[in-house]
Image (cartoon, rainbow, N blue to C red; front, side, top):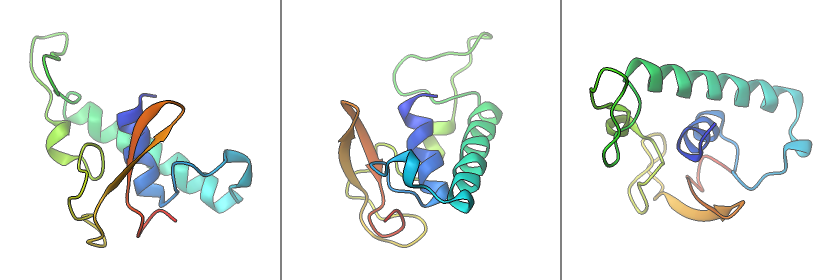
Length: 103
């Protein structure tokens, strides 16, 4: 799973991206699982995200980028709580999250 969908899945699960997986309670793990499924389902339904020149196997651009909740939205209000989106680094990659929802 790429960092775009990981960011979106963790936002849905309300889990901070720097939280060690081994510290998650069973209910949080279920929330992450649901978040992953939902983020991927939305991405598939919208034919992926076209950030530059991506096209699917039929040559069509995706539209998932129009529905990102956190990815690439630095400083914009969280759609759930209104807190400005922040960016950090996780595993050397840029990671966007809501400090209000993802504690």
